[in-house]
Image: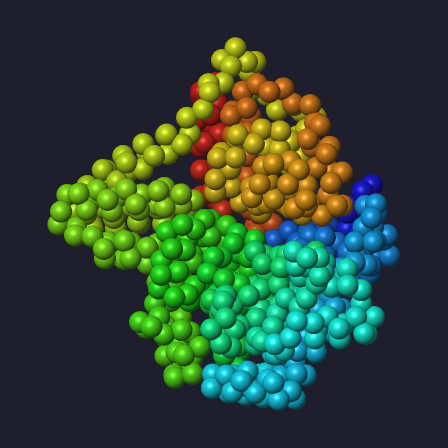
Amino acid sequence: MSAIDEVKQRTDIVAVISQYTALKKAGRNLTGLCPFHSEKHASFFVFPEQQSWHCFGACATGGDVLSFIMKKEGLTFGEALRLLADKAGVALPEKPGQAEKKEEQAELYQINQAAAEYYHNLLLTSPAAEKARKYIAGRGLIPQTISDFQLGYSPDSWESLKQHLMQIGYSENSLLKCGIIIEAENGKTHDRFRGRLMFPIRDAKGRTVGFGGRALDDAMPKYMNSSQSPVFDKSSILYGIDRAARAIREKDRAVIVEGYMDVIMAHQYGINNVVASMGTSITETQVLTLKKLSRNMVLALDSDTAGEEAMLRGVGYENTLGAEVRVVRLPEGKDPDEVIKEDIKSWEQLVEQALPIMDYTINMITAKLDLSQPGDKSRAVEQLVPSIAAMEDGVRQSHYMQKLARLVSVSPHVIETTMKKLVTAARKRPTINKEAVELTIPVEVTDTLEEYCLALLLQHPELKERCAGFSVDCFANSANREIFTAWLECDDRLILKDKLDQNIHERLDALMKKEIPATQLEKKIGASLLRLREKYLRSLESRRSELLAQEVEAGGAGADLAVLEEQGIETSIQLGEVQKQQRWSETRR
């Protein structure tokens, strides 16, 4: 038994979930109000026999106890596993050197926090910080906000922070690792930040991991961040996430702005679901962090940045989130913090009226073109079709194909043909050996279909495009979900392993070594994905039917019957589509 299995075996899912929502008996199962969204009628169910849960309402998702804790607490797989392991009394194995690594990280967190306290005290008391105090007063920040975000001031001195931290017991080598002092060409070290307004940067757990420093004169760069360290990675941190996480979950929406001040001002005015991207470029890692809290994301960046994000990464964000990304259209020349200070209701209205990112992209591109001219029509299609083709949601894809066709005054068939040519060109690969044996999925893997499917994908990354639109919910096992999600982001085995918690490494290695003949791979993965989806839908249909029968018998006092019935219709349609695809595949053998 693996450590993961032992933790799940020793953990009662009912006891865990009962800490977050009141549950009552519903036949052999339990029901309650969903802890992830607001509702009047219970649509959340726990299945003790399978040690699983499912929301039949707005969430339309489920899983095991690990996936519940991950979603509810916004934790990674490893963090959720360790939390439950501690409560269950299960000792998790550690890699060689892991304890030393944790000790090093703990010291770096302490150094950063000590530096934050030093900077903050100087801002409040030092005569040299008067310029910084005037600046933040001019920006409209109140004392409570300054304290909440622990803003600070780095003196215009080469070694003030270094000397302070070494006096309280930290070594020069540790300060270098932390990235708050740097080494010059002559080998001497000095403070990284000098004469700047300081913004401590914290991770989701509230630990200080680095700093942003704003120049108070003409010094360049205007903004400077801590250097990369074992605890600070600019591409994965979101400024303000420690203070915004709860509000993002409660409001089911994350608003991403560009600057530190934008975040601080929003929170000062009670708009607490706002974070900053640590620069103008939002990374996929940051999107994945937000996805644990909400699938709804609103970009409120300056016009140039928002346009670039929409063109280059917008559809990718939507595919990653499984939801629509929207863009706030800010007044010309205004930053979010200015809009919020001037009229908070105006800001709220802007967020509510945010455009879907594809509409924003279309508007931005076509605004620069004359669509009465054939050449500009072609340019519009050329620039917009790749984004439409990348959409995994077929309904939305069709909507934007038709919209683009209307804009350039051509038949939707023309847009569809152009898109098919693009997709066909991207899918051209060497032909599969036609002498391969007939497709079969061995009987012995029927009960481990998830592992068989994952093994195929891990051993043959070229099959990734076959997974477009495939829901991770079809994997019942949380560890398998983690592997599949990480594989979608990266198919390099070495990097993939780094993305996964060490407790999943053994499972990953076993899947990579699983012997599967490299024949008829396209058919094998197609059949495997269909069977996996069929298994998931049948399980969902079975549970829904059982619950519906219980509710009817009880007079509909528990769950919303209409919700369950609607879910049943949708599931039946999806199941019918899967069976249709399976029959079509059979005829091609």
